[in-house]
Image 1: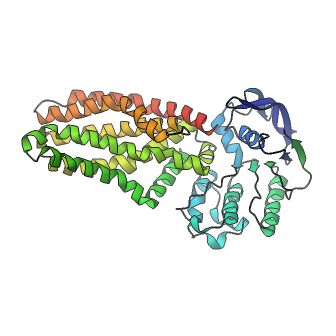
Image 2: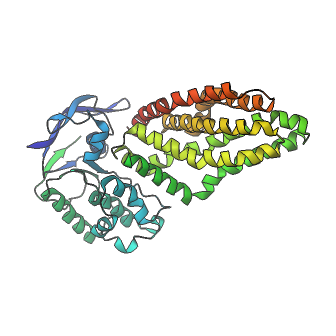
Length: 199
Length: 221
């Protein structure tokens, strides 16, 4: 049973048509990797699936129903990690996650442990390296209760150990019936994936 | 509702961390208001007469200062996307941001308005009406400001555009707010002016977040 489906969607960015007649389907526990050259619309497709961008044509379906009928409710079904880390340098590592923790009701400490940042919990985020900031952004995935993970170049700046650990998180999420849609140029630690080529 | 308070708590925590930015509006208010006695002369006759107007204009301009960063910082670092996906809805986010703007800018302005009024030799009878007017007026400024900040979000030179967009909208607030204080200082009833301000607040409370939410959706797209 395909939970997430896009049916003949088209998206404009300003005056430019990014893609059209695009269809995809992701079953529960499935993973879809988006590939394609720069500017082919991978990020735009992720933002479309998140409900941040509206399609000019076509429909995005969730369990066979219009996913955007309740746009605020759809936001709760997805966890989006864009290419920006959304990390506030003035707050500590824990404080950066507090908002996401209140939304989902899960524990910040578990999420930090899952990405190996628990030792830095009380450090101001401005002291983190680029890779550590990325891990902090990825810890929001563990923190969220959303079934659909939308990942834009998730492994950018991560070291091999962190990528391996991230692969474990992805497998765990999928084993629990969660879905992953990722845009990437490098191979992700994902087994048994579907691919979609844009552009 | 839980998410609404979470957005508010997050914004307040950020304001505390960036204390200098938070204090800037307050200092601007006190500094500009204290320029008037120097420019016009300290004679109580003239100064007391125009004090309500001075306080209102300075409060209005000071409230505009932090609006530029109200959504701007979150748009730049990607936090706005996460807020939009929190399940609260765009209007709720604008509402929470407007409330945080009021708590961080409006409330401190209210607190220092009375000492500034005394400094400007405003007749004592007018000060309660001035403060009640400012209480309603600062809420209105935050609501209009939150809406305006959402509308200019992502536009080049948004900081320049913002006052041009908001000042015409808040002109009625300024007129009735200053008139209420003026009336009370002259021995008349401030009630009709304050009631009109209240009516504006009743209209802006649902409409500004609604309009701002629609603008916010467009900005993240």
